[in-house]
Image (tube, rainbow over all chains, first blue to last red; front, side, top):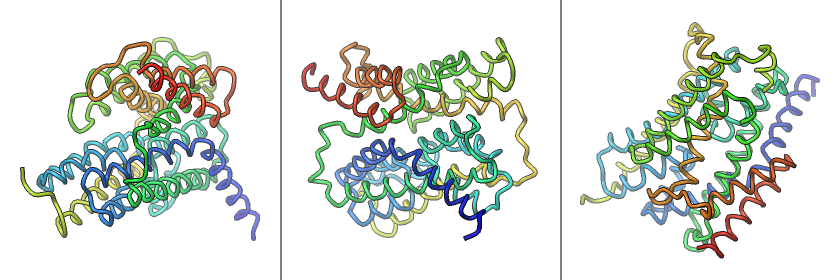
Length: 243
Length: 112
């Protein structure tokens, strides 16, 4: 094995280790989503196919009642598309880090990205902790581990839907994993302002269909954070990078 | 109410949903290499993780079934506060998740 391959393998393992302690969040959310798909009225083989191909819990759960109600194809797909709009923001944020990679690799890394893996990657990349030439290997390690965990748990939930207790609220572990990730990032004024603006707008727009409020809230938060940074620029650009 | 989508039509729906996640997730990743994002936008996107995560978390904690839950005894809020308290003295994520779920579960059992 060449040194380059060994180095990439090591970085891939580092990615796996980075997501390991947060996996209970993906596991619980995957399991409960799987149960919800079947209890919502989807047959087991279709639920498994959907989990494997779509791999987006919130879009799947948004589409489910429409499928059961026999809504037109375009309405269901449009609902999925709008629910997924936040991924366009993630894709734009990730772009500069992978711009020199071949298209098929960018397509694969993009497809396996989720809310959690995206935020974990951005924190590591902005913290300067990743070797620039092996960022893709680190992200692949994170995403592969998250994907396997999610799928195993979702399919378990689909197959054993009537045996999984859903009244304990275990899916909240997924939200707490996001809290643990975002908490330490709320350490500079622009981030706090952006986060509060995004949170408040998301709260006020919860009744807007298709989770469109989430997308609008995220954009508003990003704009607010940028304006806050313009109003009081950090001491040096490097400090801002590291924050 | 019409019949549920089944059979081939359901297969088409699933492929359509799969395409919608693939297209949104890879949108900017696959856009041609000549597209260069304005550096202002690139800088602004540093805040994308914080803002999107907060937009996901806050409604999940402070809303239940479409109703605002601003009570300080809201179990989800107590779970988040336990995580925040834990994060102040440790970066151990497993401990953090455990503390949050214990606080949340105890609040659900005893404060409900």
